[in-house]
Length: 363
Picture 1 (cartoon, rainbow, N blue to C red):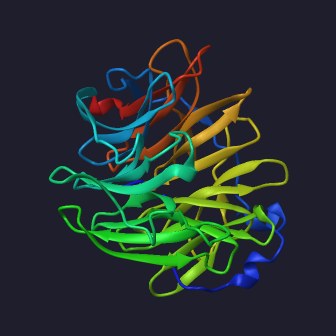
Picture 2 (spheres, one colour):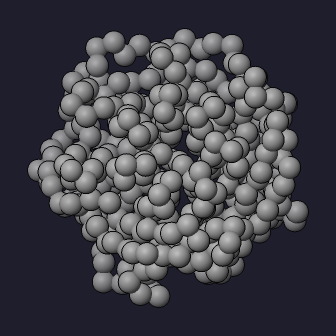
């Protein structure tokens, strides 16, 4: 579960406020963490046959990984890798309802969600949300009409799915939620609107049904704010401009917030200040996911390169390359064993490769 992407209307007034001073947003003990020698091994997950590139977006505790394979025309194909002891034992195409697809998240039951492209494979404007199960394959999740477009970002272990959709007559995107059963049949769909903003999306949901994402203010994306929604309390807007991108079942939330010059990765718990988790010496960082051990993954820059990281208890660890010839990338998701997935660009050709990072004891 990518807890990297269901909500009432509240706290609109916070959307209209300007961002606080950076000193007011972060707790007073925010220091850039030291870089440590990396205790991880990097494994390349090769794309499907006929593709030249790949990205991994999520993994579960069974070390099943989902993402996309990309051909030389930019067409994406939703891909699942099954791994054991650092080796991909199978690489499977999950299908599409159009001409391209991307798998964005999966849960502990190997139920997969994402988007399927029905026209231009690189355009969100052509995408439809899907859920995929072993028993019934890939199926579209419903939207109010066939003219609507959207994507499903995350699924929890009880089959609750969150995402976004844009329909004719809407000016901007709305938050959508779905529930599926064990066989992948859709049980219900909810349009949560924009929660008082001008646009909104839900990108991650935990096993309690709490979800996070972003809400845009009247000025659009420049006024973007992260939020968390719970069934008991509705929507709470997170301090400062930015996005909430992941959460765990304990309620820790991660994402990025706009600082005085650049974006900074944070974690946050309700009622407390944002805590910055630092960088590798560059100006910016983004946190994308967190597990139940409060290990956080994302990317941080240094010397013009974006490095994937794992953070825990104040220490930021730069995840390694699988060998020479790799450049920038990011870690997208982390499971309870501390294994992470993401992607790195091949140097010189800028083609991504899906990467599985394993704690050395897991290899």
